[in-house]
Image (tube, rainbow, N blue to C red; front, top):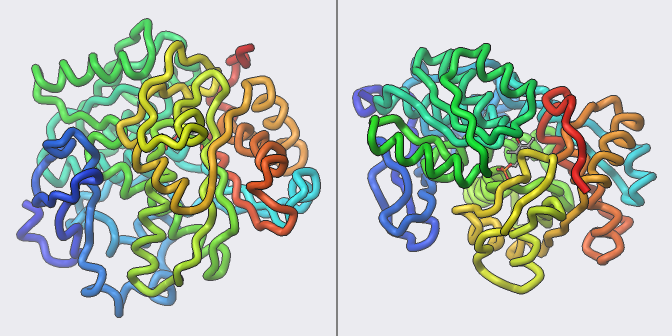
Amino acid sequence: MSQTVPGLPGAAFLECGATGATFESERLIGLSPAGKPLLARYDLEAIRDRFTPAAVAGRPPTLWRYEEVLPVRDRACRVSLGEGFTPLLESPRMARSLGVRRLWIKDEGQNPTGSFKDRGLCMAVSRALELGARELAIPSAGNAAGSTAAYGAAAGLPVHVVVPTDTPAPILAEIRALGADVQLLDGLISDCGRAVRQRCDEAGWWDLSTLKEPYRLEGKKTMGYELFEQLDGRLPDAIVYPTGGGTGLIGMWKAFDEMEALGWIGGGRPRMFSVQAAGCAPMVRAWERGLDEAGTWEDATTYAAGLRVPGAVGDFLILRAIRESGGGAVAVPDGEMEEWVGRMGAATGIFAAPEGGATAAAVPRLREMGLIGAGDEVVLFSTGSGLKYVGMEPLA
Ligand SMILES: *Cc1c(COP(=O)(O)O)cnc(C)c1O
């Protein structure tokens, strides 16, 4: 149906993130034939004159304000609960305690289901609806399942989720209340992923796994555009991002590419820092060893559910963005995440999930490593609300 709809340009084509091979964008498609993520490419030349910061400035405060660089063509297929354009809050007290010039927190806990997974899933669900998917499925460490349940419900599409048995209780309650079919599995998100894949092949469900379809990335990239708008047309020196599957980090890097091609920014870019849990740090290990791919982390343990991702299909894209940006990767133990959730909360009024605490905990380490300096303006991503982890205890 999408081709007959005038209005929004949508993606021009899809490109394999590994081989550069190109594919048509107007049908449901998962990974490239090489088994790698597909990236949506737009005809940026064609929209350059009308998609400008000034044109966007007066639009409603959701991520749909960037519609010219989003894949949904038919506005009627948008499934929205008010996601995106979350506050970017400056904290001089946090800046002082972390020893940096300026410190901002992007409060993603204010998304509709309390985490930034809403950005990706609103886009992937909208696009799946547009392209004719009938039932949706997702493996998740928790928050992605909550988002899928929410957007599936809003779209009127059935949702099946497979989550680990140790998923936080508030997230399970949410998924059930939103009407999704839940299967609990005694294992990690990677085991859940295999279970979902099998059911998708058998039952024709559409698999919304991280980076295994092209559009969650497109929703997540809007964080890059928002930073630019919310900082009055500049980007910070450093971005500290709690990394599981890495969609947000890869997405922001892609947004910066697009913004440069559109003439919004010059060649200068923030340094991208990936933070992981000491008990599950495949990107940190690969970055320290100078590898292009991360492989799989054995026995992943951390109470930060979003960081309990032992292997990421977009590993090479995460590592590429970190390196090209001059950034780095660092691991923090659960106890420090917990400690910084408290310090950040007391200093700012933001009740962050442990993943957000991890970004603050990373800064003293990055300062010590000489990767972040006293003169830097830094953005931390508080990716979810602490309310979704109530009852969870830090490990080790
Ligand atoms: C999923 C999740 C992450 C990790 O995000 P990726 O983009 O997959 O790396 C971080 N924090 C929270 C709260 C999450 O739910």
